[in-house]
Image 1 (cartoon, rainbow, N blue to C red):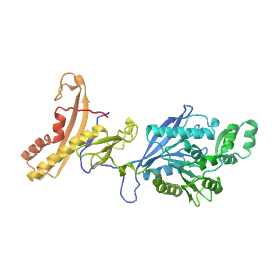
Image 2 (image 1 turned 90 degrees about the horizontal axis):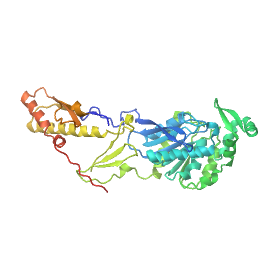
Image 3 (image 1 turned 45 degrees about the horizontal axis):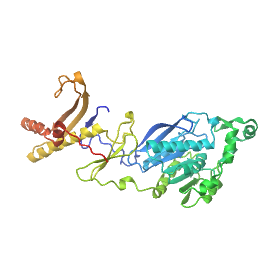
Image 4 (image 1 turned 180 degrees about the vertical axis):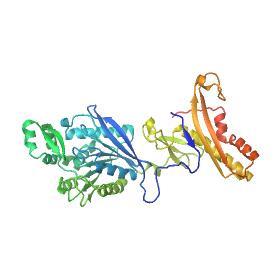
Length: 433
């Protein structure tokens, strides 16, 4: 853990991740991740995180031959983050930045990739509560849903009910694929190698059983103007599903949802719809903590921690450079903040009691550590022991203060309770449950 600097100023430098100025957007965070598919190949993903509490994790499957960076997926993920949802979108095997050969993949391998992505979220963050699929990705999440027990809701966008519907994109190359076992196909200006195994696999898929036995809330988005996947496919999905289910028309949106306004509409309506199917947010039912006590609970399986007192809640984390998400101060920043805040409070309380004209107080702190011989000459150095040093710089503003008053306030700084605790002998008494 690196030494840190913090300014104990009650106003300057604070950033809670939300800008309330009119017309500005709520900030989100984007984190690159990788995880292994069923064959051990590395798949590349992007995790879009809100800066505030995460209401739930979402797994997004993009359309056929698309990548995680397609504009619609990116915009929807950012929109969900603004509503408090963390969304993982990733490149299927052989696409984008993911390893593997696309020619050797199939609809079934896409399902396996989705399950691996869900397992990755469950292991490293939180199991996904929502599955979203666009186009063939929508068919994939319908097929994979039964293998993701944490998912409470499934959302499709322009999805086919019959995965073999995608074969019409191959045009006159379809016969060549059947006859020769492989062919080069041009899709949206890019060339892909399609093998017979892919055609056979999509023709064997029957989603009616999976959709009928979904046992999860279903939301179907589809545009009547979709010329790639007709809206009749959405009708089949909706009619096969049991309640709870909903349908939302995307009006004039195209199949790839290229317009930002359509992607934002999906994110906004999806966020409002799904909340009724999710458990209450953790922030709505914080744990009970006795006065004078602090509870630290895990927010994920890396570094983010939720910190609770009897009346407050905040986050502790590590910076991204250390593998964290930077959602809160790190442990040493908390330590420095405690000393800086207590120093400032104690000096202010004394000045007010005396009626002295102190206009402002600033306490800047820095932690460093020296080892062995490097500590020679440092106050408190003893032998070859490691020495922790907190450098505290205090600025007292008040032009009408005299020298005696300033000297006295400097003495008072060392009387703050946290300073006394840190300079006393400290014993940590552990108990385990």
